[in-house]
Amino acid sequence: MKQLEQRRVNARHAIPDGWTATFRVVRSTSGVGWRDARLVDLTPDSAAIELFGLEPGEMLAGRLELNIFAPGSCPTGVLLQGVLRHATVTTGGHVRVGLSFPGLDAQQATFLELLDQLSQAHSTSR
Image (cartoon, rainbow, N blue to C red; front, side, top):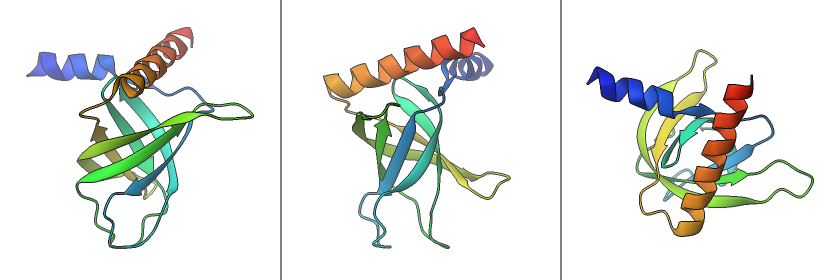
């Protein structure tokens, strides 16, 4: 078990500055649309994100849609649908969630692999 946990920790990479994200809860009963999120780290098939703008008592369950945008004056990105794996409250009072991305198409998988490689290169250059 410890070896699996260690491998998972080593495989996660912090996101370089400039990348942004928005999220929305699929089938939300709150009626709230897209909100800001902060990418914390990722692997080629999962991500940890910090969610902003949650309503008091809002339930998180099931699926979240996540838009990840590349930095730049004309940002482009990709829309992913993730399955909520866990949620915790940070010391700052925000909610941090872990998402997995089952059933990625080729373009989505390539995007996440590229972002993971950029993140890995960025973290080793520090």
